[in-house]
Length: 205
Length: 85
Image (tube, rainbow over all chains, first blue to last red; front, side, top):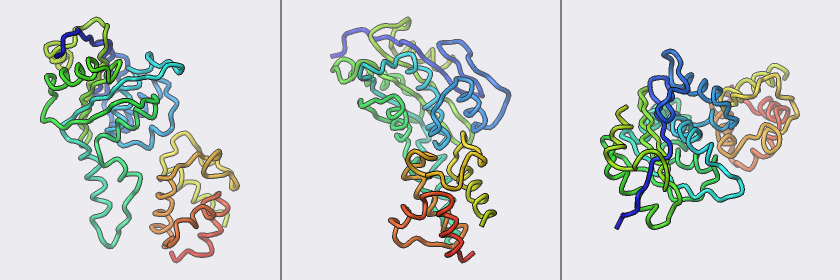
């Protein structure tokens, strides 16, 4: 069914206190906690979106990656039909654990609504959609590892069936200060063929 | 009452993660929602939890929040009159 060629327009990786955009390191700081790293990255990229600081770590990670890849693509006069297809291994477990702690003591039972709203992994897609005014398809999958075969087929399906003009795909994994984000924008043009081999290569770089 | 107002400003900035707002920037009569500090519905729920956790005040009717959370001034007045801790 899928016959037309699709391409990776741009990609970025965020891990170990570094942001790499299209293969080039664009931000790096010395070892620090993710909260500090994400705040400094937000400042470095001159993002003006105070709600960022209310997000959980998984959403901050996804948001930062999306910010870099979708920034150049935003035309306020054109409806942005970019679908979002993300995946990870730990779902929203990091926030789930934090929330569980807040309700585990019956004598000190004060569940936080602001934490609770992030106890689903796909909330990060909502944050990106609100930021970039996307009313497009979005889905979040849980896999043991980055799954380039599934991601390629699903993104191509969205493009071929014209459900989307572009697809922002991502592996955004966060648990207990360990994090990796690999985001890439798939469309009809670009420097890299969108296929399993390229995805594996870019993900492992 | 002045100390309570300062305490509330600090707590709001910290609990609601208002990273871009300094305590000194908040005036006693600034609107907390809408055009003021721009708080949202989740923030309102957090403020209700804060009243319970820090001051022992349980809001039975969440609609009361609209009046109580108008500003630091109204919050401080309500807490001052109803706190049990």
